[in-house]
Image 1: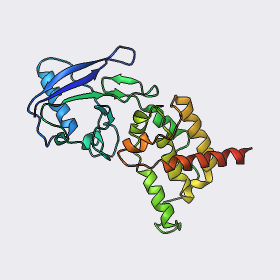
Image 2: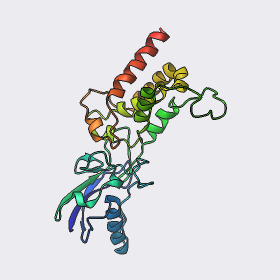
Image 3: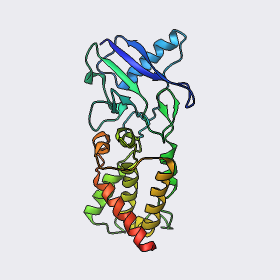
Image 4: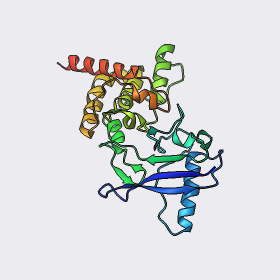
Length: 248
C-alpha cells in the first residue's frame, strides 16, 4: 500500500502547529497503525529529520495512551478499537490519512500528537478511589454482591481513560469518563461509604480542569473504544443530586 499522511506537527503547547505531508510507501495491510508510524519515523530519522512524536505504552488496547484523531475520528474508523489495535487493512491503497492530536482545552499539546491528559489523573486523585480501611484482601465471596451490580461495576471499570469521549464531544466534556469512575465505585458496597463526597469532589475537579458540559449527544459512547454506556452519566447525575440533597 502507498499512503499519504497529513500529520499535525507542533513543537510545544506555546508554538503554532501545522499539518505536514509525508509519503508512506510499502505499508503492509497487516501493520497496526502505530507500526506504520514507526516505519515512517525510521525513514525520517534516516534522513536526519525530527520523528513524529506520538504516545503509546501497552499496544494492547489497555492503557489508552495511543489516542489519536484519525481522519476526524477518535482512534480511527473501526468501532470499539484503540489506535494501537487499528490495522492498516482498514484503509485503501492510495488513501490520504489525516492524523491529529485530541483537541480539547483541558488537553494541551505537549508535542506533535502527544497531549497532556494529567487532568484525568487529578480527577481520579480528587476521589476516584476507596480510602476507608478494608483490612487485608477478603476472600472472593466474603462480601455478597448481586450479580447485576457486579456486572454493572465491571462495565464501568472497563474505562481506560483514553480521552476519546472528550475528543468526540462538541463541548469537550469529560462526563463519560467521570461518570464511569463514579458509577464503578458507587455500585459496589466497598465504595458506597464515600459515594456522596466522591461525586461532589470528582465533578468539581472536572469543572475546575476546564472540561465542557454534557448535552447528551452520545458522541462519547460512539467514540469510546470500550463501549462505555452513556447510562453511567445519568447514574453519576443521580449520585450528584443525592450528595447535594444529603449535604443540604
